[in-house]
Image 1 (cartoon, helix red, strand yellow):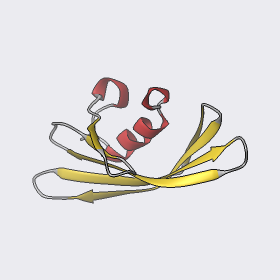
Image 2 (spheres, one colour):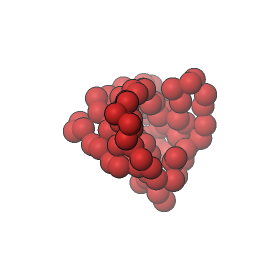
Image 3 (tube, helix red, strand yellow):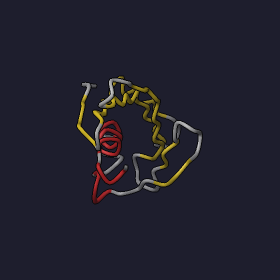
Image 4 (cartoon, helix red, strand yellow):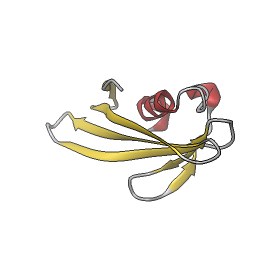
Length: 98
């Protein structure tokens, strides 16, 4: 998947190395490396993961800290089942996510 960057709140956020792993009964896990480049020249990198089902249902974000939260917003990010990698990219680069 291509690397994408976007300027958000005094930092540039880059999403790269997106990987999709299919599980049983339509379950899909999508992970990506997310790099935050701050205006002061410092940067930090974390791994983001979304888990959902291609047939519908909730989408769960597993945060870098290990916490989990529902992120089923098809009206903002599209259908998770249609393209889980694009869903993750839109979620991470969305200004309202921050």
